[in-house]
Length: 279
Image 1 (cartoon, helix red, strand yellow):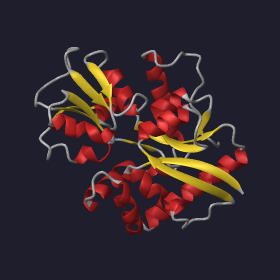
Image 2: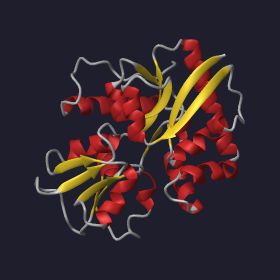
Image 3: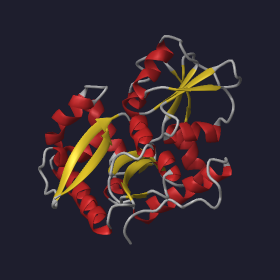
Image 4: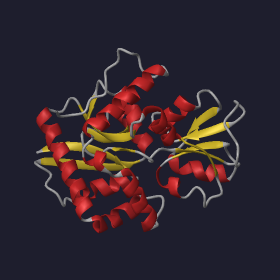
């Protein structure tokens, strides 16, 4: 039985998708999963360090790891209206000078890439765990913050200002759904093993979609926001047809992200193109 070291994030769309796998409510297809749930930037960092056989990662990181990993067709977070928000501690403020500080949720997150794309060199940038950003903005410990996950639904209640929806800007400029993150497998795994992992992930997601109420205990256990309505808002937003299968539109969105990354100098034009497993 082959052991698979699997890393996923604690955000509700991942705990929803992987609930059945974690509880072994679906067939593991001859594999043995060792599962860790951690913050997305920790997942990115440990993938760069060579850890995990399969893991959720930001598509920003996946671009840089394209020579070592391949994206699974199932389990991704992308879509329209799903992008990170650029928030401010003061209403009507805009990022304009290096005396200002913007908090981002990790160097290799797609959220940070979008801030670099659309607001290059406008402020100082500091990377912190995503759950620290909104509290720091409320305390006026920073001027701006790039908000992801549940905070997208709660920023108004916390008295923060909206500078820009970075996802909406991406959609207007590209016409593509925004690719935030996906499940990658190490290229060192055999195609047969990767296919088995993909099958288990797909089965787990289909189980969650058919039995959504069963996923609440798992989502509550790991979420920053414990309100069930907010948790399911999060799932409704980030779990969609492209989570089931990236398809041609999802692949096009990844190609577009690669092209933008080349334009801003994140990647060399000759670097390995991000690849999705399967036909």
